[in-house]
Image 1 (tube, rainbow, N blue to C red):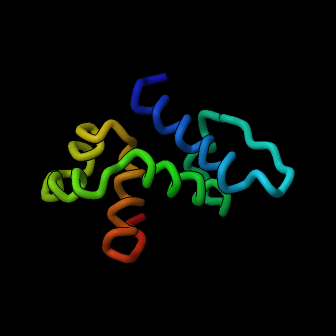
Image 2 (image 1 turned 90 degrees about the horizontal axis):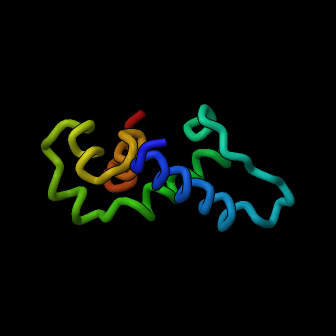
Length: 93
């Protein structure tokens, strides 16, 4: 797993531990479920985006393409979309 995906998966799973620890469910890392559309997955992705992406750093990079921004911030493109969506007040995907 790449450094970028490693960071994301750790932040995403930490999001589950922090946000979903009261429902008795267990969450497992799966290569294909990190961006699944379910409520818990979206919440964990938002948590990861907020943990890994500094808003000022992101704003400094705006104007570039999403892939370049994601690469510079060492996060997946989907997290950049989530964070920008939160800043502008609507979803980008």
